[in-house]
Length: 205
Ligand SMILES: [Zn+2]
Image 1 (tube, rainbow, N blue to C red):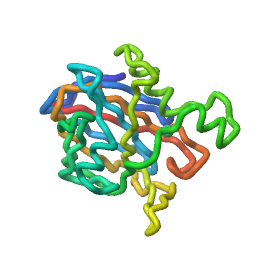
Image 2 (image 1 turned 90 degrees about the horizontal axis):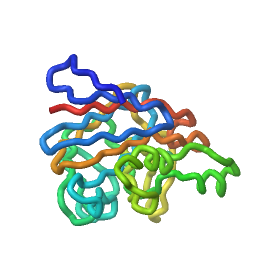
Image 3 (image 1 turned 90 degrees about the vertical axis):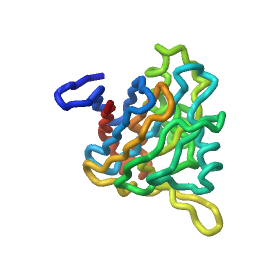
Image 4 (image 1 turned 45 degrees about the vertical axis):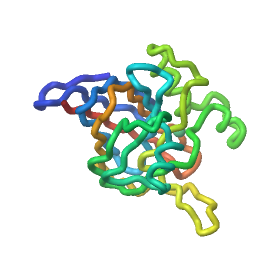
């Protein structure tokens, strides 16, 4: 993690290499800025309440609250206790996924016959280990910038993301929390344009 205090109000400035993850502690009132540096890259967060680890950001409860399978400005990402954790205040991309599971080592073995591939799940394991969070505790991600189009018959796809270089999403923090983000390492299907690239995270006071 790198922290840059050159800009007024900038609390943290983290460049996550493509295929890796990072975690940062955030406080209510701060703003998290997530930047698709080169474009075409998915950014997958999980988050836990700073007060107790039994409360986490829930994709299921968020889509049940918004009644949509996409996200946009004004949407509130809620916890498994249906409490507000983050509000989207800016969104350059407009296409996100609330359906698909994060990648894990088993996915690469089962579907691609590749052993030991980096995965979002191992990224979170590495980054959340200092907080005492174990693998079974890692919840579903919300998949920013992922393009999983929903067909009329309710099947869904997995196609190239539409994010352009420098596109960003901003979250107003509504709950003190641990926010972990994975720049998904999937390079064997279109979800990261077959080429995982960096995601920059800035936290503003
Ligand atoms: Zn992934």
